[in-house]
Length: 221
Length: 197
Length: 210
Image (cartoon, rainbow over all chains, first blue to last red; front, side, top):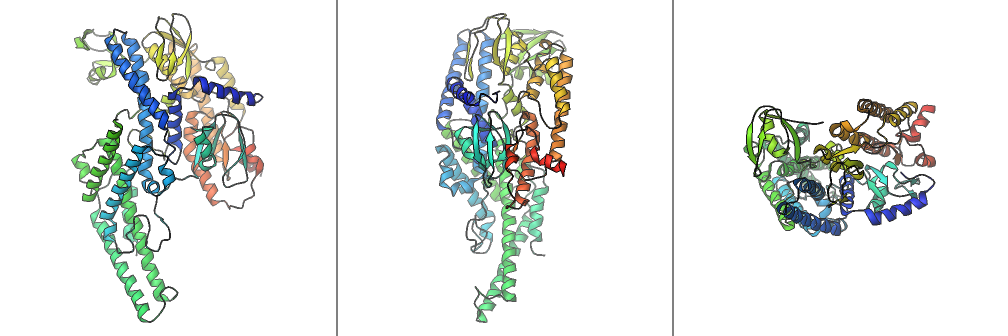
């Protein structure tokens, strides 16, 4: 834990340590936790996921080789456990994202900025999700309603905007931990300033810190 | 009272156990749809009446206007309830893909409407195509992994067992270190117990 | 989605919290010679008999279960240190003592799998249980006095499990205050810059003085 006196140098140390010791698995774990805790879908970690897949494949091959080359079963089983852990994180990360895409499919299909956060495969999935859901709602509800009331995302023809789209609640509160010293920054919707020391825990409006989460200064826990 | 049936429909949804489907209530659903059509007829006739009286429908604020407004609002409310009913059921239906796989057991299928069955197949297809594009099965590794090996004590003489091309003698009271999956068949039959320190 | 925690209730399931805690580093003393392990999650070893080395908890437990090492309990897991922590927890109504974020999970895993490596294990165990209870109680009382709008609430030194307990309630409560409070409420500058680590922050103190 960082002491109060050494804040400046600690931040520097953190960077240095990050540089030399952060493994892709640690980055994946962080991405997984953030994705789990954030109300909205975050930017897909394209290169990280690519690297992790490569490492998983390599390790799968290694383990197969070990088994054939007389390496003791203990060592092999430990490698297998390590692989299982990474596989779980990897798949769970992708599943959480699918879950969010399903939940906010209409919001995503109307919003290019959110789409840009998805992987190519996720974009395809999101499109099909929204199409299938739209068709289902049309067939089971909307086609049976009077004209002027048949829109999927508007209550009626006189609604000025789409008023029936489930959206992520950006003003919900999240628990977060800062990675480094963060000088006073303004909280969304208020004049209040907040300062965070390394490792400080805080419950806060997600929208006040969303950029910092994406930049990696703050972790959601 | 307007909107009561639609409200019942939503209440049915809310009173169900979380994540569990209640049988699709086509009776009540159709009644709400019929109510919507009725509202629409009344709404139209009120507007027609205003037009016949030579009134400006946009600006006039008489009894007929407010009557029409009430029908409109009731219709919108019914629509929202119907949509919520379908939408929330669809959410549960999607979660079933993860719980029971791409083929629904009979007792669940009975609770779905025809379009819901179709939706289940379609969505299951969407998920399948996502996974095949990634060449990755996401339906495994659903929970954090545990050590694949466990320590067991043999409770009753089992004798010599062949597994993974080696033989082990599971004598009574002997202790072994086994694959969880291999040990489970003995544990469930009461022949072994798992040891924690 | 099956097998995953419901985001509406608690974000991380007990299994998931344990999974995260299993990556915490501990010191082991191996009793075998084994080459370095070049895992996806990092490199560990090489291992030599009687030579202490650092490994993640899941690996330590796996080796321990196979009779290949002893685990050195972390420094905070001694009777002396825990007694101090417990006294301090009892002395203060609001401040939480510094313990590892995953102290509950780490200690449970060690009690389950490495009991014989912990000196005074019964004493240590009951101290940790007492600390847990005192802290839970403190969390509860502090929650009761949460009564005001805040944009941010510092909850320093709460552990993973305590955060999991507090999260759903406090999140919703703050959101409710936020919605119901008049938007032109005069902002209170020192509410968020309060340095005291505590659940209910200044709001509590103001309330108590009233």
